[in-house]
Length: 285
Image (tube, helix red, strand yellow):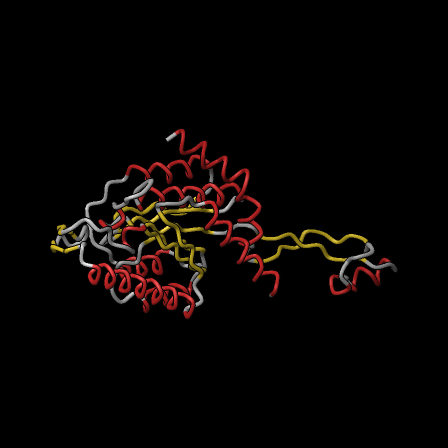
């Protein structure tokens, strides 16, 4: 736990604090003071009443209302407890969620977690503070789920009822679930939704291992597959590629940002790409 805290804090301090703050702005602006006009100030910020009274130009100064609510919805279904490279999918998902939690806390935002499988398993309401963030990280690392399936519709419904005001929701999952369009659309209409898709290379390409018996980690169903057959491997690869492209097309159509992460690489580059592409869009607006 201490090592995770130190690594997470190091990443946040060195890379992500400024990136996070520049992308996720506050909900509004709060009046701070009136001061004398200085060269470079915007004309539209001039307070004409004070200017007329003082006989020289004064401007209103505002500060950003920084306080935001960040919710980390993390999939702990059976398919997340899988990995053929450096770590399980659930481990890299937890590391990314921990970095986001510490980034939020460093910016004085509220952050909470919702862990789900085929039902909502564990909820920590959004709060502030380092001790709270450490509790979230501990829960992400040690919580043992009861379920094995994936219920995205039920989870999004729970989040909509739980969060009365617009929040930033990082939805961390492999999205191995049917009928995800409507629940994601409803959640994105009410909140700033970011999809974090977690993958493992072996889910995209079958190795040539002869006849193997595969077990679905969510349903428990088994199937025997001859992985030495080139046609079988080709069909598998085409099918998984089509599924990934269909999901990405859906997210683009719903205007939901995606952060793809994989067990064979770290979280730093995907997060930085997300922050920088989103910052570019913010500046264009």
